[in-house]
Amino acid sequence: MRAADPHPARAERPVALVTGVGRTVGIGAAVAERLAASGWDVAYSYWTPYDTRMPWGVEDGAVAAVGAAIGAHGARHLAVPADLADGAEPARLFDRVEAGLGPVTALVMSHAESVDSGLLDTTVESFDRHFAVNARASWLLIREFGLRFTGAFGTGRIVALTSDHTVGNLPYGASKGALDRITRAAARELAHLGVTANAVDPGPTDTGWMDEALRAETVARTPLARLGTPQDAAHLIDFLCSPQGQWINGQLLQSSGGSK
Image 1 (cartoon, rainbow, N blue to C red):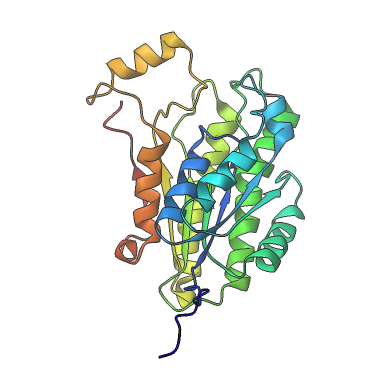
Image 2 (tube, rainbow, N blue to C red):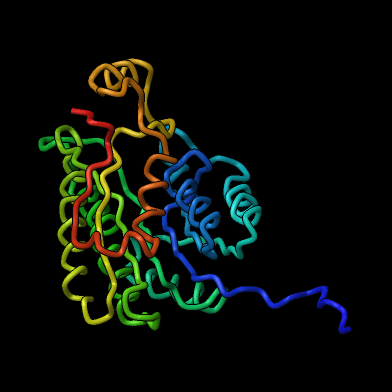
């Protein structure tokens, strides 16, 4: 009798690209790990200079920790730094991912530029950067995905993380509104590929950006009396990327626990 192969052939796993995975407490990190647990290999992008200028700062070791969490599920993983304010970066990002892991079957966009300012105090520079990162980069990522997609009809997935926050956060809210339209357009314009495209609004999610007063206020207006967690969003996105989620397409999905 032939001895068992000590290194059996590895079942092929589809590749997901998740953007905006710079911190272990973020939605992007939760999505990356959840997809790995569901059988995906995962590439993830991050941009440390963004965290540097934000109140939470850089989380040392976060990129490696995310990779370790993905790898614990038997998934291959690849971390790629990407400045999505650069219009040439989406194509370079896809080049790196394809060279390292193979063609992308699911694109999950959780990257964002988010700096609070209102109608009267937003600068032109800030406005342009928000639209470059949140809208233009998302369009270019979707375009690269559509031009390069080689998967079976009905298997491709696009999910964008969006928001309905506008008051006091003009450039973020306006650029996320543009993202919604771009994503929903993809559901129709990529129909010949059988790719689904949806936007998910995760509602107020506790990723370390809220102060105690805002946490208390948010909990008080949420029927489930708690804040959203990154895992809440990750479970929905995991379902949308699964074969069972195929019939949901071209939608803006509220996943906010009923928060008002």
